[in-house]
Each structure stands twice: as C-alpha cells, then as structure tokens.
Amino acid sequence: MSPKVIAIDGPAASGKSSTAAAVATRLAWAHLDSGALYRAVTLAALDNVGDARGRGGGGGGGTASERQPPRGVQERRERGEQGGQGGQGEHGDQGQSGERHPWGPQQIVAIAESLPVRLVLVGAAFRPEVAGVDVGEAIRSERVTRRVSEIAALREVRHWVNVQQREAVLRHAGGVVVDGRDIGTVVFPDAPLKVFLTASPEERARRRLAQRGQAIDPTELKREAAALAARDQADSTRAVAPLRAAADAVRLDTTVLSLAEQVNRVVALARERHLG
Ligand code: DC
Image (cartoon, rainbow, N blue to C red):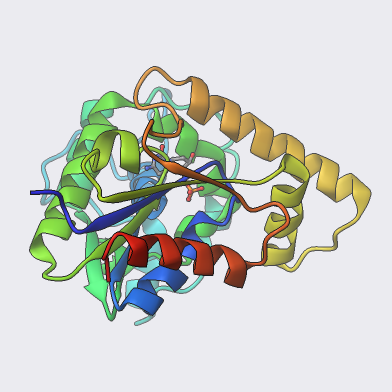
C-alpha cells in the first residue's frame, strides 16, 4: 500500500518548506521537513563530536549516559527555556566549527540515537528535538547551514534519517506532506504525489534574503546566489541520494509564482489524485 505522503523535493530556497507547510494546512495533513532533521543531527554533531585535535563537543566516544546534550541545549535548559536562538553555542564554537572535523558517520549516528535527535509531532508539524529540547530555531544558524551538506552526504546518516522519517509517517494516522531532496526518489518512492519545485538561482537568493530580513542589494544577491549554487552542487553531485527529480514527479517552476499560487497548484494536484 502506498504511504499517505505528498513528496515535495527541490533545491535550497525553492520554497519547499513554506509550500509543504501551507499544503499540509489546506489538506489538514501533517508537515515533515526532512532538512530540519539533517540540521538537527548537524547541530548535535557540532556540539558533541570533538575535532581532530580532541577539542570541542562532549566526547562522542562515551556511552549514551556520559554524553551531554548540545551546549546550546544545555544552556537553554539551565535557563529554563525551550527552543530559542542558537544560544551560546552559536558564538562559543566559532574558531572550532570553522575548521573541518573528520566526523565519523557511526559516531554521528550514535550521538543522534543517544541524545536523542527526534521528530516530535507538535500540532500538525513534526518538530526537531535534541535531548528533548525543540531546536527549530537553533538549526537555522549559519554555523549549522555551513556544515549540513557534509553531514547529509554520509550514507549512514541518511539511512538513520530515513528510518526516522518513515517511522514518523507510519506512527501518524493521517497524511503527511514531506519535503526534502530525496523524498520522491528514495524515502517514499511510492508516494501517490511527487512534486519537484524549482526557481531561478536569482529568485531563490532573493527569497532567502527576504526570509532573513536582509537588504536585497546586488552584492548580497550575488553572494547568496553563489552560496546556494555551492549547496546545490554539493547536494546534486554527492554519491548517495543526490538531489534530482523522480521520473514521475510533477515539475513546478515557481520563479514567477507567488507562494499562494504554488500552494494552489499543489493542492489542485492532490485533489486530482483524491488526496486530502
Ligand atoms: O532544506 P534544508 O536547507 O533545510 O536542508 C538542509 C540540508 O539537508 C541540505 O544541505 C540538503 C540536505 N537534505 C538532504 O540531503 N535530503 C533531504 N531529504 C533534506 C535535506
């Protein structure tokens, strides 16, 4: 039986998550942002896995009970906060996190499993948690964004993330709109509707700056478009589950579409297929 899933894939800043969330609301389905899980694993690794010189982190080689929640998480816990910004970890790690760590995939999966990194259904959205703390804000930090493609290229990590996604969907009684890079090709290849969103690099850069509330000047646009192109390149050329459209995906170029228009198109496709 095919899962009750709408798969929305596409490159960075193509509007996948906003579209997926709005489509889920319209259909009264849940929303799962798979990129958020890769980001949560990256945050956990940044805060818990030491680098080549044995600095940083909580020492990933220890037992589950010895491992510490991510520093930002620990600090927020101590302050009695839930979620919040990247916290001290955001600044306290600079200098270490700018360097490349030889992260071992098994070590990262063990950390994710033991902290644990989890998807938790809150209302109609699966939220990423690390050690029981919502990290929905912290995973959007520049520090995580810089390293997430590296983590997402690891086969073992992808396998672990895919298991989490499939279990979350299985546990959920209703339908789920899942967005990412390989949802239609690898995670839910039998999804009854697959959409591949695209937009021009300039438009995606403009959306990303607007999302962050940054000025949309030509220099910033150029810099952001280059950063997005680098991530597209990393995501499309990796050996495991590269970003590509499934053969049976509906391609939707959103360059000149508003969010409402792209949501309407996906909802119409869902209704045509008697979903929702
Ligand atoms: O969508 P995003 O920018 O939050 O995704 C973060 C990273 O995770 C990005 O580098 C691509 C990767 N990713 C992936 O490889 N597969 C997915 N299904 C979702 C995200």
